[in-house]
Each structure stands twice: as C-alpha cells, then as structure tokens.
Length: 86
Image (cartoon, rainbow, N blue to C red; front, top):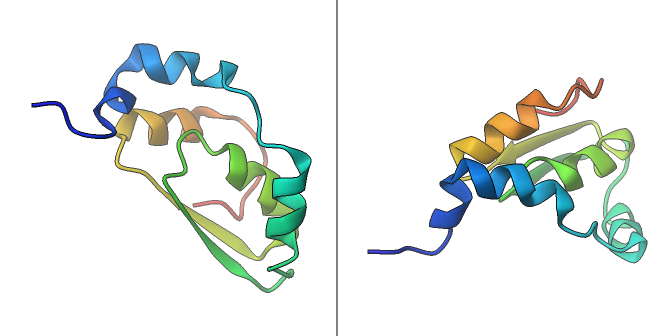
C-alpha cells in the first residue's frame, strides 16, 4: 500500500529534488522574523536541507528531521560548512 511520503525513499526522487524551485525570498524573510542568533530551530521534513542551510547563519542551531533516510543522507552529503546544523 502506498503511503504519503513513500516516494521520497526512492533515490531517483532524491537525486532530482535539487531541481525543485527554491522557496521565495519572502519565505526566508518571514521565518527570520521569528528567530534570533540564540534560537534553536527544528526543521521537520527537512529533506536535503534547503531551508536549514538558508536559516543556519541566523540561528544558534538547527536540528533537521525527515522520514526519508535517503533525504537525510543527501543533506549530510552537502559539503557546506554549517556546523550548527544537526
């Protein structure tokens, strides 16, 4: 039986996720209005970390979680120097 989110387990979907359009700048502006440099953020459904990487410079720490192991591995494989993302 197909469950919501199952497609994100497929490596082919993970590999193509980078072609998904980025969030508009207004989304990031709105989110930054709720945090400061001492904030700890939980990114639920973080996927490959697009949102986390944008927000990392503005917060103390980000913890990303996702049901898709393949998406988490894609986020970990990104070689950015954001030591405040878990």
